[in-house]
Image 1 (tube, rainbow, N blue to C red):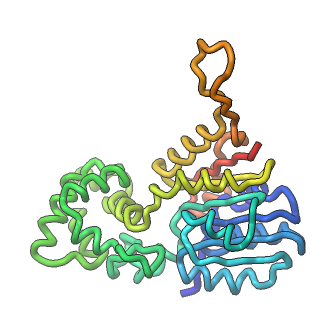
Image 2: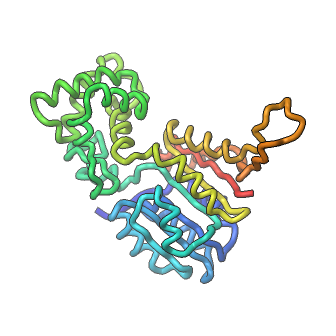
Image 3: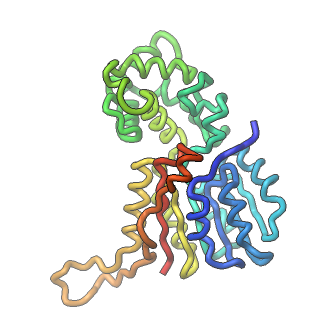
Amino acid sequence: MEFSHVSVLLEESVAALVTKANGIYVDCTLGGSGHARKIISQLNTSGWFVGIDQDPAAIQAARERLSPALCRVDIIKDNFSNLKHILDDLHITNVDGVLWDLGVSSHQLDVAERGFSYMQDAPLDMRMNPQAEISACDVVNTYDEQRLARIISSYGEERWAKRIAKFIAEARTEKSIDTTGRLVEIIKSAIPAAARREGPHPAKRTFQAIRIEVNRELEILRDAFRAAVERLNPGGRLCIITFHSLEDRIAKQTLSELAKGCECPPRFPVCVCHKKPKIKIIGKPVCPSPQELEINPRARSAKLRIAEKV
């Protein structure tokens, strides 16, 4: 299947990100290259675009789709947690903008064999990097019951986490849980019927939690945001698109910390910490318009946070 993905908050994010046609811009989550194509369309022959993704399907698609670019383009298969080393290898000291679109791509959800979707029966995988060591199958079949419950509760914010973990632990003693379909049935059996009739699909939160664990999605964010700010030129922009409360909370807290100046107690007559703000936050979080939601309902939980290096 062709790597397809409808980019969320496309116009708003690129308009905020690209402030100079000859700048250097980094897309840390290439995906289907929607944001990337829009960014390079704003750059001239002196501009430089760096795209990063750990999914080989995204890398292959980007090489084809970005080939007409007038600016320099470097496409890197890696995890954005290695941003500092990626820029060092390219001999880039500072950049003018860094973008994250933290959502799972439509391609990953829609291609059954990737094992991300609770709507299609497929091998239980969920790796954004297919070469990664740990898959969803490993998490579900090897983590002890307490660890599973903790992950489902913390990363999925699932009220039935302990019960779901208990049912998983019991089911795998009979037979390894190797498919998304079997995992969905176990989750459904663990959640009381009355609770299943309310809210989203009963497996949604558990699948989110396992996917986050497999891909280390949350644990790398804070350091990655800070690393990007360190490499921004003054006036350079940071744009972060989040899709659920956990990653958005990390984005919000990290940007707030970086935007904060003096931390001395109020009773001090003068500042002795000498801490200066590294960024300023630009406006309030931007949400998709009603028109975008009509075209792409998957965008409904998206938020765009924008910051500028001072």
